Length: 204
Length: 137
Image (cartoon, rainbow over all chains, first blue to last red):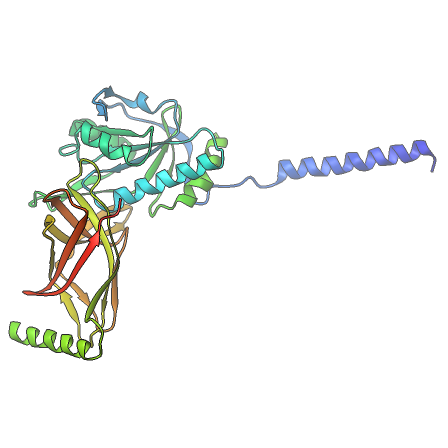
């Protein structure tokens, strides 16, 4: 084999190897979320008129421009709510530590607007990091949002002035277009969010 | 019946003391300082019954909080619910753990600003355990 043929053979081998590598990249299974359920088509949110933690009026557009992790809870909840918000805060910190961008925004929607004033929401959500959003306001307007998202809540121990509120434990992912994009069922673990969120965001 | 329960309890206490161990022991006690603006916090711990008798905790009090209740969080059909435990039964030589997402003490309405909390665990009218712990941040 002359030098010319050797060159052609080498190029051919490199081309075959490159082709094989490319097909592997194209054909290889893409990573899938391990915990989240991604909706086949993102869903539009119902409109509503509530307030944020500064007392400013907000509607469904408040979710736009961010990947939102939305949890429904209340500040007088001693266990599940702070536990879940801490899971979300831990996941966000781990994503930040690994250099992921953009970072999700943590949103707490109060299912106890009777006790959760904007001031209280402001103090509460700040405990779980910067840039979080708290939503509270009129109960009927709140129902518009929760009913449209399939979120359920009701007071329990209502004879007791220290009543509790039973509520859906799911964490919703609302995309930067303000659409319901995915959901994480309870129980919540930071690793699920750290694994799934980059996949969900990239797959958009 | 009350007298019988008291005798049982006393027997349990004596039997535990006779072998040199406290009858009821609390370990891994964690009570977070109430968050800013909050009138409540949660308490977590493990209660170990070192006696050969069942111990039933009927209620818990604290001078630092107006109310202390034993609660349990559960996730049922996707719903987060919280139940008040009327009483807590700890079988002989067994432990019960209060942990995030499960059983917890709900401490409501702090009576002031403080760094330590005292908890009195009752079996009926008798205090069977007193715990003093520094609040965590």
